Length: 203
Image 1: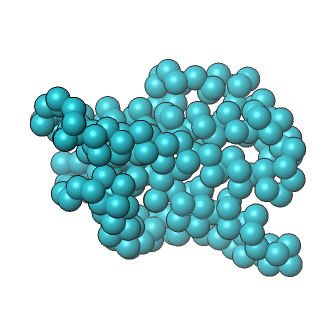
Image 2 (image 1 turned 90 degrees about the vertical axis):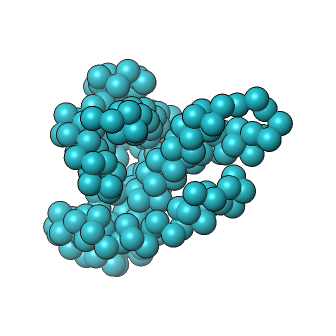
């Protein structure tokens, strides 16, 4: 296994851990302590790693040139949230926002590269961090369950259309496979555009 794959898997693990902890903290702020009691409000990767999604899948998909992976979802009880129907949406949004904060921080470093004495290898690492987190944010905002975007979608649609939520959750396995196979191809140009907009650099 080459160093590029090792770096990618390490960055992915750290990024998905931050993503999941953000979900848990938002739920905690809104009144639900399920994640806290489950020991998931920690940045310790051991509490979040899914052996398949965080290790096996990222390694295999990286070798195939289609890097992908996930961590164990942080549990929360929507009935404990203080924000009503918007509670799950806020919890869902917290994950991608945490990734975008990481993107913003490292994009500033990349923007400042001409004035800083930074090695080329470090800048490559920064670029990889930005791309991984942009991908995580963009992909998770796709509005199909169990992705975070679905929680936002279900908060926005009128109650009389709740049948849509039931149907989408019933067929979520099919929807997530379609998202991985097809919609992700639409995400790539968006990620590249945002990357260039934020950093002023191309790949």
